[in-house]
Length: 161
Image 1 (cartoon, one colour):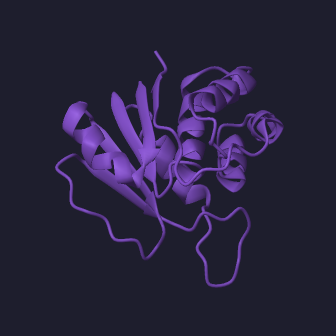
Image 2: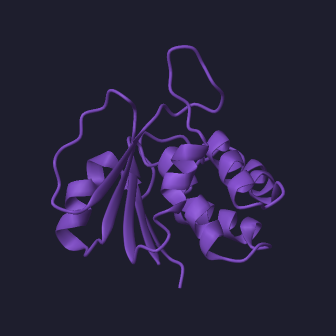
Image 3: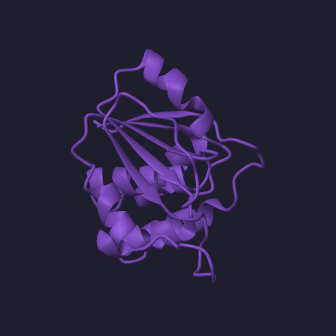
């Protein structure tokens, strides 16, 4: 499995240069998306780490939809900035692809690949529960702390095989 992770502003250029089997768009409920030729799953929720009135929090159904894409060969994952929602989804998929016990190493790779990465803690917590990792994913991401301040995250090319 190969994960390409980026901000929404990079999607067109990545699709122009890379063969992609599927695109996962993680966007706010009111976000407009440009049409693309690749197969795409769109999940609409706000980038929040706890429920807030008037906003849509990620939930177990969102995580199930993300994890359902683990059989994709090359998956392009994007959110608005490529910092929080998309990195959380990539981390969840990486953990699903690798055996338990590698959570901290996967989190370290994520930070090395994208110093700005600050995976959405609620998404990570829900994925930890779904994958039955006993808090290992939550701890690994909490130990990373906040990523470097940036308008957009550095694009990631993560080969899991």
